[in-house]
Length: 535
Image (cartoon, rainbow, N blue to C red; front, top):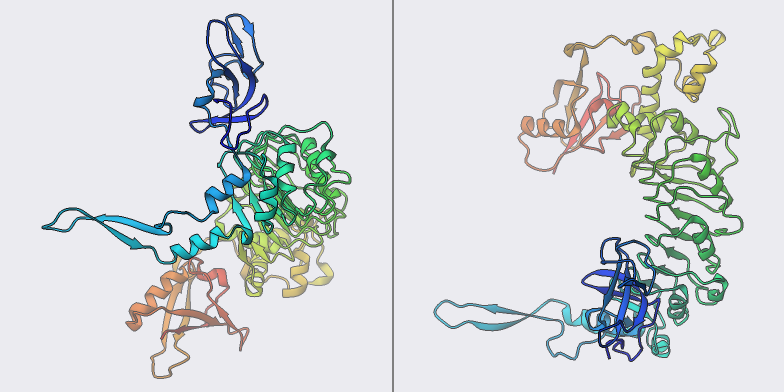
């Protein structure tokens, strides 16, 4: 029968179907005038996939979301789906084929006929046998397998796959939360659920499903076209939820989650349409929040208005990580605001207009200087040496502005303006730690090439027989180019490791740990010694 699935169940109105990679919802099953057999009325997810709005010869049989998203289709032309256990067996079950886990190749030998040669792929049989032990499966990926629900296989699913912990059911034919709950109820150890890319109809009372997701800690609901309120309603049936991923849902705002999301420490709102930081502050109700992902939104400004410069905000006391790549942050005051967070230590902010205000290296240094406890910036660890260099360079860079605003090298006369301190809230701290910048260090006159050269010594500390070199190098030379130069000078083919010892910090050896950085990034100065080691 055209409406019957492989497990004997039949398609009903509101079920999901697919055809040639396109997905839709069944809105009508029945006959049409002057035709034979049963037709299925489908409302396709794509606005222009169909031909009409559910009407035929002036009579409306069903309602579509778009004027051209409806079609009448014979059941045999549709993928009606399979149950979850069938999908697991198809993907992970042991194959009866004696060549399962073996690759066959056809090799042509010169001077003879074409022949088939059997070639065993290393480990393939072991992988096949491992996957065939369904009771041992812990991670199951069924994305795009056209799963419609559990069907009549709930007992098999419960008995044969009791140890599944991670289940990816994204992009399937599951039509509702009830169907999803029926699957998850059979998996008592499930902790990670991906239900993204499904059109899940919500029940009138979400708590109908409350007994089915008791162990789930990680939930992914990307591209489900829910509002923020609907997402919060869904979270009600996940009492142990710790991570919530709700990307690509065209959210324009979020509001106070109330008593929802109380255990969530990671919230992923990537690729929505959020614009206002005031809305983001509403998420402070997530008391355990440590990681907030806001990549690919439209946020222009960051502010914690509850406190002034130099104080810590009451908002987000546990927040450590903010990823806000590809937004519209353009003002350095936003970076100053992040220093108000009590626990903040990890920032990603690539793809924002603020990146265009200086070179990537300079932007990184400014961010590090402005945020006192930052441990990771743009996915790279911040070392103690890098922080020291960034803060000293900050003193030099903004020293002239400091002097003009009322700053002075004599502590008794050092009284910069409030406007300067608002723009540079950590500057006075740098003065206390490193001392006031000297006039010679604050010169803004463009340097001539000869003035940008520093004279250093280069030696191999592991072999005193190797000649020590004295060289003048531009401070803008990258570590990579310096390595190439040393390889040429010493005629070395092997990999070189570089570090240096500062004349101001005897006994402290600082690694050049990034080949793409210029020498001045590491605060190297004339008279310092570069150590070059190779095997």
